[in-house]
Image (cartoon, rainbow, N blue to C red):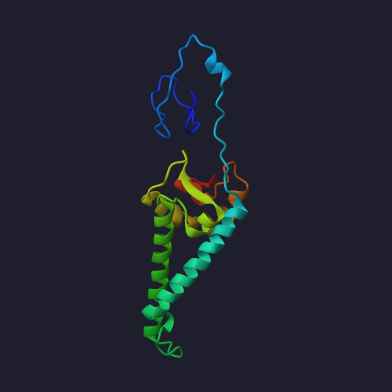
Length: 186
């Protein structure tokens, strides 16, 4: 039986949809109405490589501006100090700002993708959202795993990212590792 609310397939004896929780109405078995009104499965649009790339580019600009401002204010890369001084203090500032940038990017992606919006600002601008394999919102831990799995996607000559253009569900390697999908929102 298909759910009239979301279109997902459920057991014929189910009272509620396993995906959206909507109440299911079981028609009597002696009527042929079940065969006369087929409910098509929901159409799922997976986000391909180029859409995801544009969203990434927007996110990179946003993160670059935010981390650049915060790094400058915090004194990283010299901050208000003399840029000609390349001593241990300068090196410590660079290490701090790089660590700071990693934490900011992690929190940005993990918090935004596990939020009720299910997308970063770049993905929202393009109309994409991140879900688990059943189309549900992902947890912060899954979003964290997805974010750090991007390191593996990039380590092999970016092939992990390019996989989004060739796999059946348009999954990049980090999506496969984390068990996520990137969908076009309707």
